[in-house]
Image (cartoon, rainbow, N blue to C red; front, side, top):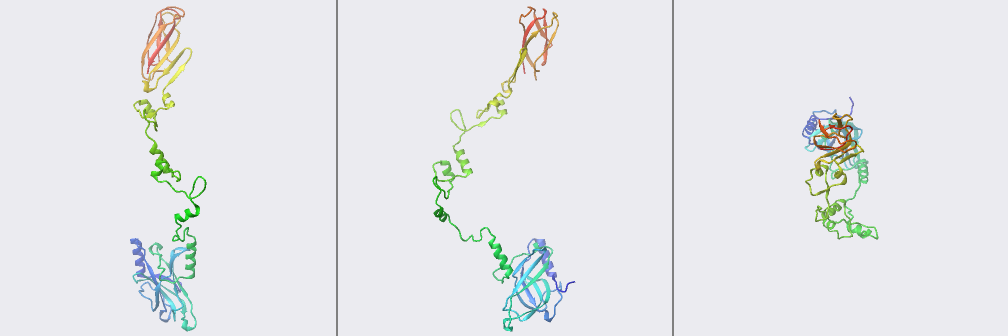
Length: 352
């Protein structure tokens, strides 16, 4: 085991455990140094006081060890005007005066100016704790003497701030005086329009944010009707099909949706959309069988999805004047008959 070391006391361990349990950090506020009554003492967990305390004062710095996150570094400056004794033991106290950690160190004499020599001496303790979150790493800068490193770190942190001097406020009036206000002919400071100014649309000297532009446009837009010009939504295909909405507009594509047609020399069809009943018209022409009275099967260009509603057939007197008729109709086709040979016919069917 090392000759010189630091340990938490039993009180300190209990205080740290309580801090972790309750989530309330332990406040270490003071450091004391002593002369050990003439000998270097061995730190004891049961200690509640130093062997022979010489001085107790607020801690100067208290921070995490940058090389070990489980350790905290505690420092105190012994100024030139205190001393006349040896430093052999060190104690760390909380805000309630409890000795939470104790350490020993190689003997070091702290002279007084009256001895003919004087110095500022830094006493440092590195303490291993279960969690640095259990210790409040904060000191009162109004009651401590800063080390050179502490001062250098504070200056560096200050210089790295985006706005280290917020007390020096640059007022709008000063900036406007310096740069002037923006206009169509020159650059400068731009004022933002209020919502009322944006909606009124009369001010030509202020800028508008995207939100205010939106509000100004929305203020002027109204629902289009047969009597009032304004904005209107485009109807969905479902609205077009239903045919009940009178406040939306129909695009050519949605109007065309559902219509379909096919044409050839022998047959064709035309499909209406559902909003027009979904009717399908089909037609064709050709010859009935060369055998009188024999059936000739005809297939529609497309099958009717639901039902065949009507079918008519006629003789076009191409080669004979036989009587024509049909039977065995279905959604896919029909059979045609003629009393003559090679009868030329036309047919027309309606379905859906």
